[in-house]
Image 1: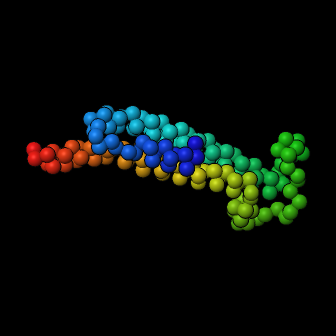
Image 2: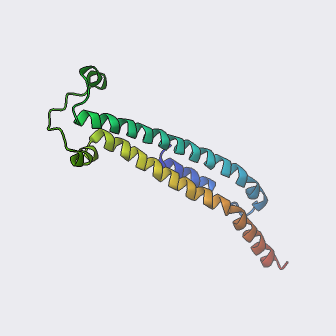
Image 3: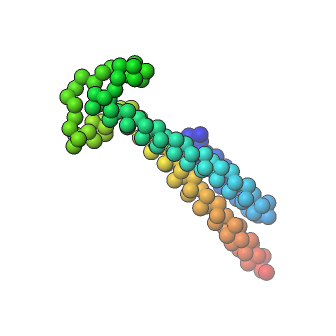
Length: 145
């Protein structure tokens, strides 16, 4: 699921039918369950990506230090590092500029944005019953009760 798809889904689910507030109130637990499930899936994806990042970072560290054997390089389909072996204080710069690590970082940031959006949706769902109760109170006031 993309962020746009999530927003489109929420645009549909967030609507409260003013004529059937009783039915809308009953929908709240289902909406909570739906978006909580999606949130958990994305948190698990993020954890997996962070593990991938850490493993790739370790490999890249060894790669730039020239510590990988020929068989391991062939398995990863990488060429032997021909540059100067970076000093300890230079290694962060090498790793920060590595395209493979940056691709994983971008994926992590995207998933973090999804998680933030889902947490916001869940907060809105938590206040849904209050909004419905307010609408009922307003209708009663307008009706003169």
